[in-house]
Image (tube, rainbow, N blue to C red; front, side, top):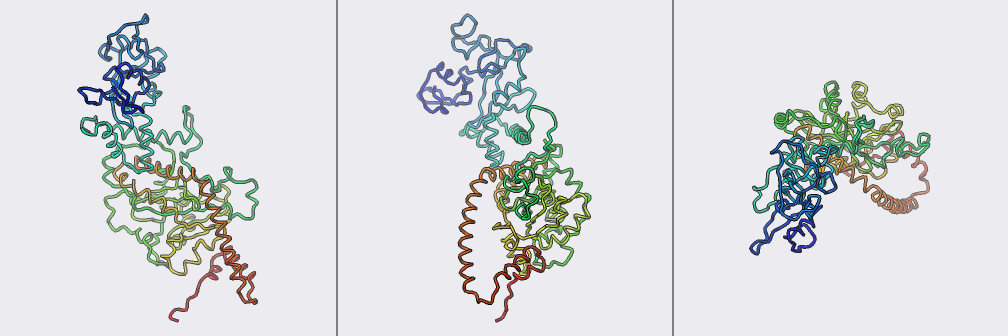
Length: 552
């Protein structure tokens, strides 16, 4: 015999092969027969997977009715205690055959459960061996923790669908005859969803205790953005430079993340595994908002800007009759691109309607922002959306901003630098990020970096149940934020170095230009005009308008 999984392909006899794989249960071996190697299972040569006694067989016979267990008797010399010299064999040993599915493939294994009076349940014994059963009654299939972790990583990073991942497992089991592999795709889908939920609960802080957890959020957020009582310095409330602690968010809609109405009909018995909130907002609260929110469609009044798709798409053209979700809306921190927990909303009807984005933006603005006094909202159609925003804040009790921000009135509206080119010239000075104190060199387009990778997986979510879709969405957003968090330090160091170099170059050029100006020009007066414009905004920003003499 030889093992295809071990580092060497040394030929071994049956006893040596069993001894070498005492704890290497998921290795794949081959048998030499007629000068050819053919794959066989460890169970076929007498391997038994012992549970409950650190790999040793339990000496207590099971109490089940005759016929429930199978008796296996191996030939060989016995010791005084009734065991073979090789500890893998036991006289009149009882075992159960289970299909074990690992990243390397699916194989049958013989399991010997502990039958002591103090023994754990069969499910607990399997869990201690890092095996997840596919059911809670009459277990016949188990999945390894390694396989489930591998699937979560592939679905998040490589955007692999469950069907493609299962096809890979089948081919690794038997590439020549995949139809001979037992079909456990349905069981895999169920277990993978449970595993995703358990990982989410672990992040939430749920352990062995059944007590209620104070934190209802099972999501990660940006470690660098200002959050009172979390990462703010002492005395920040008295700092006159409140723009340093401004909550800056970028909001956008994503129409590709739609959902087919037929999928909901076929999965109408599905349930959500958790009622806590991650990145997708809680549906019961959001549905209450949709049923009670008053709305003045942006398309109903004459636009003072160009003909934007986000505004016009709120009209129902009848092309979405087969969909019960036409997209999603979300917000992220404008500097680092982390999705704000609880702010991802579904578009139930056509377009980025005001009541959808109002809810998302208010949730993003209110997350861990108690006592913050400044808010920057970046949105592609901010010039039209902001007209009714404060009006609907007062008209709809289901949405609100932090009281400290409402009291200060320091709310700044902007348009991302890429989308700003699609606006009229008058929008530039009023909504560009270049003229906002403390905005730095952010581009306001980080939501596009979220939608890009998501395009590779939203097609597989169209036919899921709505509950399953929400859980899959949360997993994708968690993966996005996790990668942002682990790279925050390196990213910020690179940005600081680039900012210092950029400032030195710009300052040198500015000094050269200043030296060439006529002596009657007062630069201090220009600086004061700039300060007033960036502080008071509104009509004061018109000093930045560039007047072109057309036709000359």
